[in-house]
Image (cartoon, rainbow, N blue to C red):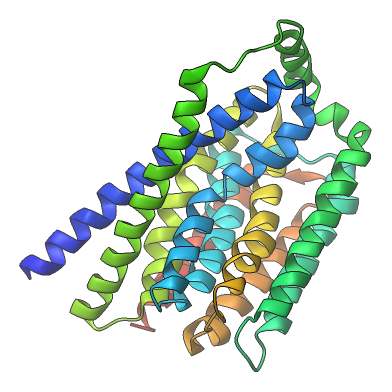
Length: 322
């Protein structure tokens, strides 16, 4: 019992440190990019968007290297489901109705559905292998390139942020030695915290006799989704609802393509029956549901409540797999 408590404490602490260090790394990388004159929009699409998936990415890479590759798919599926049900649900309930711009409905949402379908097809009868990882990273590259090349379609959604960013860009932010030191140190902390996190998941799994993927799909996914909750609620309260939706869409696409693609080069990603038979189908269904409820270009408070109830149901059904 003591071992379980110790492992649980290490899990909570390492997850908290991982999130803080990831945020520090992203902030430092963002400042360095601005100091080189890179467009704030490009930084947002690449560094900031990818930074939200950094905890999942690093922990997934270490999980594969430690022979617990089933954690990867559990983390990806759980994080995507949490983003769509929990994050947007809380944002809609707390912040009020969320307006969804037409470009997201017509372009990004279909891509999100396609990414979910890609994952379930990729692991239908086999592990997720390196050649599927290449396809995933290629799809992510196409998405990022398309987003950057068509950046005008996001003006309505990001107009206030872009004005603020352009003002900051005129001041030409500089990156001093402290910024570079923060970048290096924070990345080291990210890897250290992720290593402890993976070890604690393995220890808890062994002590309680449950699959590591179930811990990843529930506790890890919930913890890594907390920053998205804060960002999305603040965006809605600032009357920038498009950012709340865009934050979730970008995070899910990076999870589906980046967090599965990179670790697959270290080794095949095992997909336990609990993920293949329950987690992935639920993720696809939730993604399709999300696609349809946004067709009227609005997520209402009542729909947000339904999303939260569905998340509770999702977690409760996980209990039957223990």
